[in-house]
Length: 152
Image (tube, rainbow, N blue to C red; front, side, top):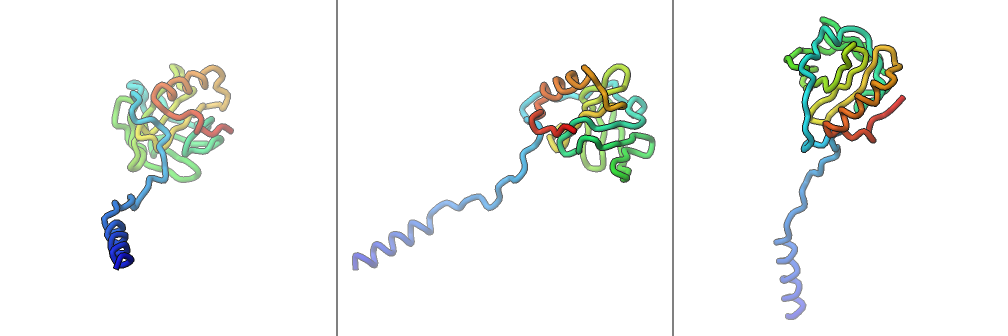
């Protein structure tokens, strides 16, 4: 009788236990969503047009060559539509892509998805000098995890 009562008590306790979440996030964004974020208002498709080399990136490999033109952004042989939404904000397919920093001579740029899906620093020549430090400082300010950027 005591054994039966104990068994029923254990069974009842198991039945009333809270369920564990069925899904656990498997990815963490590249940007702290609580950090301030902005785009460079004067960054336009005309200023970005031409060939670039990715220097550092998260979700975009360093050494990747890309081209921005009227047809869109050409990356690894695939052209994706790049729509200018104004104020340094673009749409790359379904992803938002903001220019966080572009130097005055259009040689080095830091771009990212403000939701933290991707980020990269690109340069026209692959030799940015001090501009690389400036780009990294901006990305750090906007909450991107610089330790997760891959460097060539």
